[in-house]
Image 1 (cartoon, rainbow, N blue to C red):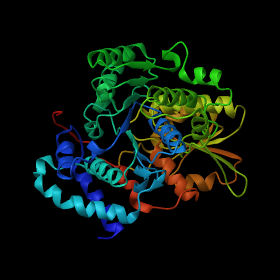
Image 2 (cartoon, one colour; image 1 turned 135 degrees about the vertical axis):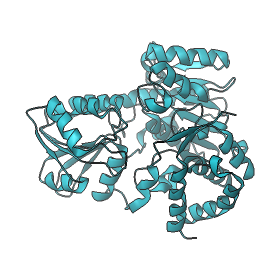
Image 3 (cartoon, rainbow, N blue to C red; image 1 turned 90 degrees about the vertical axis):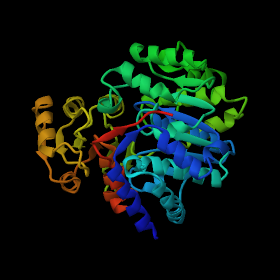
Image 4 (cartoon, rainbow, N blue to C red; image 1 turned 90 degrees about the horizontal axis):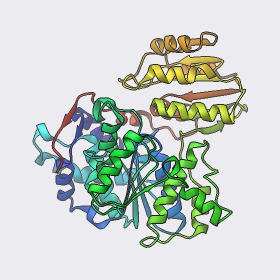
Length: 440
């Protein structure tokens, strides 16, 4: 088996859809020796900001000298982004080796209960991190938390960044129901950090934390004084993540710093290493500002839900107020794409809608119509592809590419900002038919 064949095998696992439940992951992990029992985790859930918070935690702990594993999803371009050690992507050879070792084990599962792509990749990551003797793993949930495949670990700390409406068809139609799913990562006696400030959602998190005797630490607007502000008062040099753009990153930084703070007795980190880690955070595709060889400014942001679109809009108004820019917009159909259009369209002078390279995409025509209603004065063109949209905006001074992480990943490739990985973006796809099984 070569790397392309390994990727094709993983791609084939999409046929088994998205499934919520822990039985398969527990069983598959046991078949490879329960590598999770040899590792220490920080488990991160939430609607938005998970990836940025994970990147901050990874950077801080790596700066302190630890060997840190990082597990995130989806990937922007290469599948290998999902599994990293000290911010180096897993090698192609290691992907092949792990796929070859796990493939025969899958034959022990009946077809009706065959492990899904995400379940298999979760166990592959656990194997790799254990082999690499990681001191700490920053461990991001996929979707939800309670029945997410990542929830077979018992972490040092659980993190719930925030709660907003997203994936309602899977997680529930209300903030309370979504919070219950996300808070499913809370474990008995394990501390929890959250920046959730929606009263309905916070009440659920508070109750589950009490039931689990899990100390709860609230930061940002959920607390009168965030750990970030406390740290800044005690140490003047600490700044809120200068390497990541956006006011919202202050809250993500507060969550990361609170987590580091409550784990100080187990994993000591100096103020110097906190500053160093925050100053060198790298998380592509989230308010990422790039410049073309011709001087064109390009802002890429995976504003894939309404809450994310609000953050992008606030950042555009605060950091780029008055700039006449072109918006390239592509959104998945299973998102609230109409409200995303309402949020972003009014700020743009020109709008180019495009399908996302996904079977779940909203059409360019649908997006264009929604944008026209939100901004009748803008020049709006429905494009056949991202390539066509980029061609039409090639002479502009400033363009914003947003609406889906899938779209941002494709743009990073086409703009030469990330090595091409071709069809590996297709691995982010999953069936719209989800199977539910009981939690263990």
